[in-house]
Figure (spheres, rainbow, N blue to C red):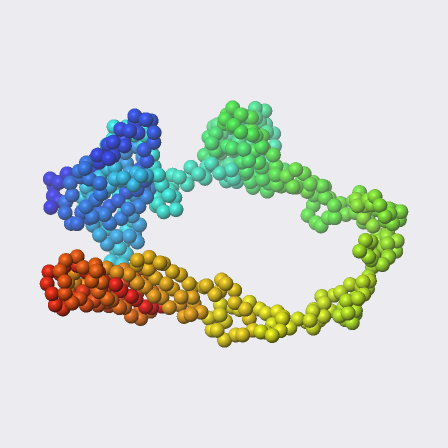
Length: 522
C-alpha cells in the first residue's frame, strides 16, 4: 500500500536505453510521441527496465509537449493532458512511447483518481513525467495538433507571441508627416498626443528609426511591444491610423523587403487606403493608383471622353481584316448587317428561315433550320416503346424496379443485376445473393469439436439484419481418435456467431471430430 515511504520515479526501459545510446552515437533524432496511463490493477507498481507494457493500460494518447527542465538540463519533462470527458479510473503507472510504438520509459506515481463528469466531478488532468537522461539534444516531440490539448499558460504565451508576429498591427492614433524628435509629448498631424498613444513614425531622416512607437509621459519614445523585434516587423506589415488632418482614417503598409533588422534596415511605409482628395460620389471614369485607390474621377458624356475611337462605315462593312478594337454605333451595325445579308449554306454565313413542322417531318428542305420543339415533335413520331416484337427505345430500370421484378417496359444493366452479390469460396465461406433475389446469405464452414463440447464459431460475415437458421453434421473422417455414433448441433448466438456441438451416442475413446455447419440469413 502507498505510504510515506513509497518512492515514485521514472526510468528508461532497456529498449529506451538502447535507442538513446543509438541516437547519441549516430546523431539522429529520437522522438517521444505518446504517453500511456494505467491503474496497475490496483497494485503499487515498481518501474522495471525490462518492462515492455504497463500492467493495466487504460489510455494512450499523443503528448502535449516535451521540453528540457529549465532547472536541470539532464531532465526531460513529458506532458499529457487528459480531458474532463475521459476517466472513471485510478492512475498509478505511466509510460512513454516513441514513434516506433516502443515503450521507452516507465514510471509510477501517487495514486490519483480521474473522475468523469457523470460522477458529479470533472477536471482536466495534467500528467507529467520527469525523466533523467544522459543527453537531451537528440530528443524531439511528435504531436498531432488535432488531438492534443494545451495548458492555459502555454496557450497565453503562444497567443501573445503569435499576435505580435502578425502583419496587421493594432491601430495607431496618428502618423507623422515629417521628421520629428522621438521624445516627449508633442502635436502630430493636428493631434495633441497623450501618454500611451501609439504613433506610426514614417518620415525620419534616418529611415532605420521609422516604425511604431508608444509615447511615454516624459523622455525618449520606445517602440511598441508588438513591433519592437525584427521578427515582429516584417514585409507587408499593415497598420491603421485613427486620427489626423492628413493621414486620419488611413491604412499604411511596410514595403521594405526582407531581411529586416530592426534599428538597422531602412523602413519605408506607403498608404494603401485613405483619403486621396476625390470627393464621395458616382463617377464614370476614374484613375486608380497601384493600391487600388481612386486618385482622379470624371463624368464623360461621350465615348471620346473615355478615349475610345468609333469604327467608320468602311470598317464596319469590311469583309476581311476587320478591326475588333473599335465599337460600332447602331448605324454602323445596320450597315454591316445589310452588307452581309445572304442565304446561309454549308460554306458561307448568312440568314435562314425557321422550318415548318411539315418541312421538319419530310426532311427534304436544306435552306431552313429546325427549332428544338419541331425536332422533338418529329422525333416523337418516329420513336416508340420497345417490346419483344417492336424495335424502339426503353429506359434503364431503377434498382427498385429490378428488385420488384414487375416492370416489363425497362431494361436491366449488369450493375443492377449484380447489386448486392458477394461470394467467398473458402473453407469457411459464404454467398450473398443479389438484392433482386432477396439478398439471401448462405454461409458454411467446419470446426473441430470434442465429445459433448460446444464451440463458438465466428461467421465469415455477420448477417446484416436476420439470422434464420443454423445446421450441423458430423464429419467422421476428421475424427482424431476413437469411434462411435456421432451427432452434431448448431445454434444461433447472434448475427455474427454460432455455436456447434458434438455428441457420441455410443462408442469410446473419442476425442475430437470435425463438424460441418451451414447458416442462413439476410
